[in-house]
Length: 451
Image 1 (cartoon, rainbow, N blue to C red):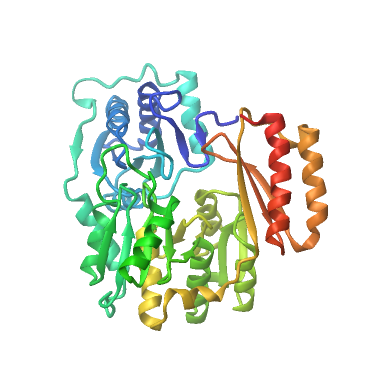
Image 2 (cartoon, rainbow, N blue to C red):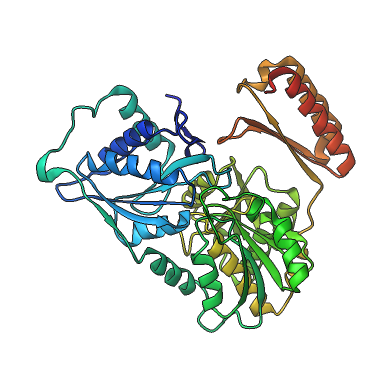
């Protein structure tokens, strides 16, 4: 069975347009509640969201669906995705639901689920949810009287999550003396993130902390680090930290305002953990999108790299399968399994800041542990997702490019799991060459299946 609703990170789309409608949200709530019920007792599901206007609409529909199956709901309001994962596991709830489209614009929204242990659902569970919706198998299951669910608000969820994050930072350290520009993207971390860094002693210049329901990710946050970079230079800050709308990813800039992406952050953390003997199996897990320079840096430090398909969920699945404790994506998702079960932008930032404080080094100096090979990523909006091998013009162009790059580079082409985009990524020794080759492939795609 092929999934129709779920993509690589839950169900996502334009709010109030299929599949991101109140009708589907209610059905998802009913199906998920049915799956997560186990045993003869009251069951509870945590629901949190980011700051999108449509979050109210989707939240209400989900609550209705879940309560209609005899399951109680714990509402935490705006909270980062990893915070909802944490609250789910710490409160021993049966599942968690996040209403967010992450880094997408405000008109989009999404729904993703966590199991009781705080991990995202595997493909087979998502497929079972879809099957329950499409088959109508649970349509007749209607608890009545005192068997229907209730909704409660968890007023101290933000405080609980702040305490958890601070406890991941060593007690013998603080952030005194650090001046940090922090961009929260007008998203879910607008309260949590400034409080964490300030309470640990940093001087925080906060950006993107005035959400209005429509400005999430708009010209700010991890998608637009140039805003943070400009503020770092203007304010003479030590570094900048930019989160995305649901704060599960982070991008840094150093004291010069130069970007330090997820690959460099993973290189900094992995090589430090290797030196300390805390990187399990001496292995870092990342995706096929990470730069070859990261693999080279790890190998020089005595470690190794394992690659997965794109998506932090697949990184986490490989980490759990292989017994690894550090993984992530070039986009800024980092998973420190010793602390949390999913990507956490604030937690990741704290790990980097610990290294900065312990070493006494600037972020620019730490980032030199890895040298990136030239890389280019081109996105082409498409009207349909056709197998590329079935499009002769595109397939032949890809073959020519792969032959030209040979063993000195690589070509990775995939459809986005969340948007109607084909992503074309090339790496090679010469930036001009790979830009030209990527443009050639993009042109062939545009001519055949471009939107």
